[in-house]
Length: 391
Image 1 (cartoon, rainbow, N blue to C red):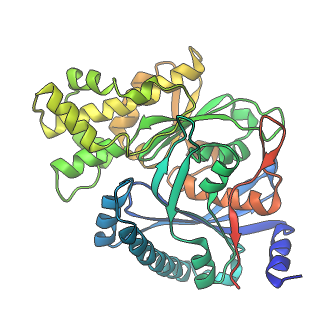
Image 2: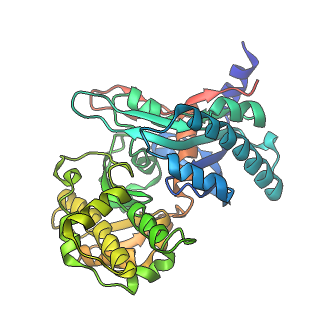
Image 3: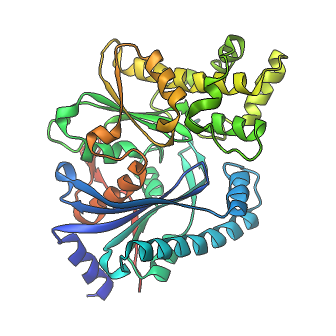
């Protein structure tokens, strides 16, 4: 048998696996690196976070990456050149971080790489979804000498789904039934929710959907009004502004909210260019703080709108994670939009909110090599990702 296959079999049969989860999101400011010890599989999966950091990208790379993300007209050569540069930077960041943690590559069983989404097209009008992630798993495996699982979104699409959101699949494996029913809310660039009910002991697919923007419009407005700033730290800018109801009501008419759930979206739909068109239609000029406050309320409204559509009048706990949990104004507004529900963070479930997505990709890699995957409505099963061998 090929030695790489023998190594993969040995990893699958281990009592626990040490996996390096990698995640780079729409903020395009750095690489989340989580060292995770995974045991078991399916509903018996456990994930212990050993180390975590976000390694910042060079400012120039972050700027160029932000300019290309979700741009359907971007020159392919520019994207490929950026990919080559990102791959080299990822390898450097990972090696530096492992050295800082005093962890050798030999101690890591698998890398789980989400890559960097540069373009994602949801399904619609008879077309299946399509997705494009930068950073090749084969390159990481060859340069770092570690088996690498990647292309999670592509596998999700191949199984007949939209490629997003993916978090619910990992949440089904990690959240104990004693906490259900509950809502898992991810506050990244785009917000998505998972409605977790009792699984009945089966690894079934929970209901999940994108809800609209979380941080993407807020961040874009901050960058526009305050050059040098990239986000609303602690929500202080929005807290000093006043929500403008005329602008808010106009934002609520976005066509995304008229589509049936589940659905997916991205910064390409909720772009700052769209906001500027809305402002031109209204013909009003708002202060920077009022503008940011209104966009923050818009995110909170869109999140609560979808949650209420799913849970009705139930009063359940909403566990938030992602960068948006640090925006105190956004969290406050979400709570105001969901009276009767308890708003907490995923930390209370034992899943650190900042590291959650990187942990989930480690869980996907663990399930890929040692589990049976998730059950589809027709009874068939699927797993996420492909394995790139280091040799």
